Image (cartoon, rainbow, N blue to C red; front, side, top):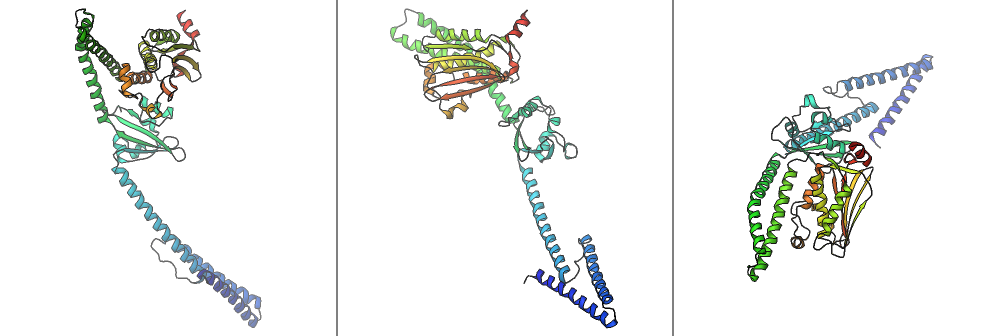
Length: 440
């Protein structure tokens, strides 16, 4: 039998004994009911005394010993003692775990900030306090966007696309760049990771400057070499055995000139990712010009179509937009066989303006698509060199679209062709009626 069950049987026997003793004593004294009432009163007083001792001990249990009471009251006190010990054990484990968590987060090289559903700061580690200049006494409970007022970070939060981090340059620190990435978790809570990327950004700036300076310095001597090679190719006195090598040298020199031109253009675009302004552009006229350029190539696809589904115009920088569209069309023409086709399409919907270039070329394997906009990345290096590609065209397209708040989408099926779509936001589209009213 369990101790608790025995205690209850003992309490029931004690109550029954009290009733019998009181009733018997009252019977002998001539008042059995009075004796029973006195016995029950004494029993109730004893229970109240035990209850008082229990209540006093509960209020002073931090230093007082538990009362030594038997029966049911003893079992109740024993249960309370066991629960208190278990609670104290779990509390100690929780405190140890929190200390370990604090030590581990303090050792992290990155800052960690916990935000609630309202983006209010709940907790942050020491590295986050150092990088973001946070103070526990003043900044806990404040919204993170009220402390970090950089426009890039506010656009990052409003877009709610946290797949890639955003790099900001705090106004409080010179030559300091921070990478911020938000990770949603739980019920609307967010974890913000902060890392110092100043060294990487400085190295990237040195790389860009080196590429720009080297390209600029190489352009002049390469222009001289190209001029002499062109003169040699046109010289009728040139030995027939040298005509082939000189022509190949001229072709490679022109290819190097194109690479340097693209490098200089890419360096200029990388100087800033700020969204530029611009003027309304006639996309129909631009695509018609691009079609003529493709048909003027010595070898071109048999069918080059233009499909204009909207008379709305695109607001942007004309040289940059022309460069981006031209690179897309040029790539499609290079990788589409003569019996294939190319289609350029412009349309507008509630999501903005869209320019697409579709070809029936060889297609792109899925594993290569995420890296297409990297510098000098080639799906087929041998064929790219044979067609004269520099490997910089899609990188230029990416930066031009970033400067106009647009995105590049690539859809391709191996062996069936590819489609490159430029998605421009609605504010980059101007209806033709508005353009006509502005000119009038």
